[in-house]
Length: 353
Image 1 (cartoon, rainbow, N blue to C red):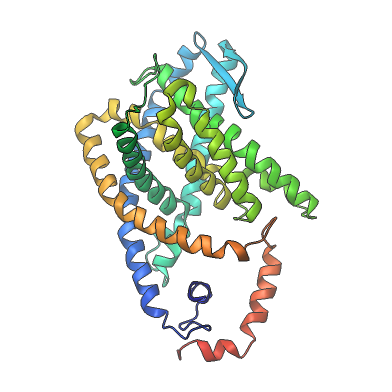
Image 2 (image 1 turned 120 degrees about the horizontal axis):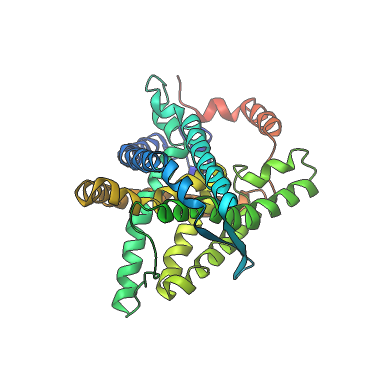
């Protein structure tokens, strides 16, 4: 129960009497170490977004002569048709708008990072999507490298699909932007958002439609949907990349599913964009600059893995107490919190101010 009491702001555990202040200080120290990854991720996102916008006119002009296959996962990949001509040009504009809007939403939700005057600055940044995108990106780099090394030792290697663009061509900009947005729709909105919206509607939530875009909190049902959608996401990469790509993509899918459930579709889109536009960034800035950023992220990734493992451990312990269907309304939370604050236990467990 120590973690539960610590989350509620107590200085001592009501179960065992353990002093929680040192644990809180250690957690903040770990958060500060992980926070170093944020500037590197911001730099990557800025470079990638700048490339997308700079080459926007060229890609728009070339899109009329290109073709893009649209697909659906149910759970295997099902082709829906091909976009060409003016339709593909309009779709490119929608993709850019979606990515830019997601970036702005991320910055707005993470505005606490830019306000160091906040008395609870470390705790505030821990609740931002930019912090968690940076943490997850650094951790993903390390975990995927470890998985790939293990698979390689067993004779399994990832096969690069033929014709995969890795330059500053319109095909690359269009293909990776489509992956960043459309894959999040078919892998997060449809398998997680729609079922959660249905569950919310059956639970009597009048605002059930907002569950379509995520950001409504982790529940037991959401965890099941996160795992299922991530497995499907990983298996969908087998046909083009080989069996060795499945496990790394399942892990990355879990990351993006968590970002979707906790923060919303904009966070998972930005993470996907950050990963997929890496090849374009390398072509734009060169291997030297990219190598420096990559090494820094990998080094910080080991710290991020420790933070992620700690939070995962605490999260697993909290699963029995999680809501089954949907999170409580904000009004219900405030009512419950105000009731808890009125109990005499509060004055006993908190240290004098």
